[in-house]
Length: 143
Image (cartoon, rainbow, N blue to C red):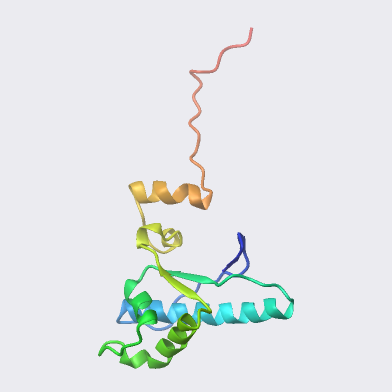
């Protein structure tokens, strides 16, 4: 989580359950992030610090669409409570959920291999600099 341009919270862990559906796993991640956002907003309110509406970015279009329309599909009925939790906060404008294509997800470089143009696109955003090429051919001798 970022507050302005400052990173204030970060976590990573291995899932303890294997999800058979990617949307369910992504939606569960959104629920966890939303709970953290609610806690952080509560803390900021107690400190009399105002903030803009938080944004959650997800690369799973199904999860984003599910948060905007809680129609129960046969494949999503088993995570019913999470759907209502996120949907209610999105409808009340407490948070906005935005789809971002996987190629623009900076965290993807930490979870899966990326090559070529994708890596070249992400590298400067992560502040990873290209190694300069040093050549002795261009060095002039001092006499």
